[in-house]
Image (cartoon, helix red, strand yellow):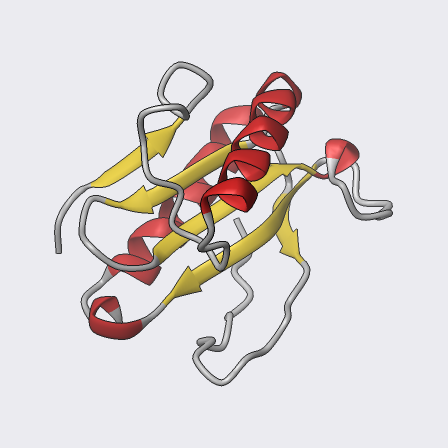
Length: 127
């Protein structure tokens, strides 16, 4: 497995945002949305590899979804697909989220789970 890359307000314009969005107009809209979320604690991490392996999370009190989970990190998207599956990227991304939760003094992580054919089951972890 390779390294993980954090996309931040300083790097979002030059980094590829690997997600379900594929056309340039939508990708730019996603990047503009991300820029507005970084100040709220939003984080986007991805694999330093060609393919889709990413996690997006934010303190739950700043989540886009209506959720009452103060003291939690809200995982908005967790995706590992194609050639990057079964190579440790999913574990590394979840561990990055868990480490961030600990650093921020959050209790746990929670998320919005949307199951697709290529989605991996998400196992709940207590911090």
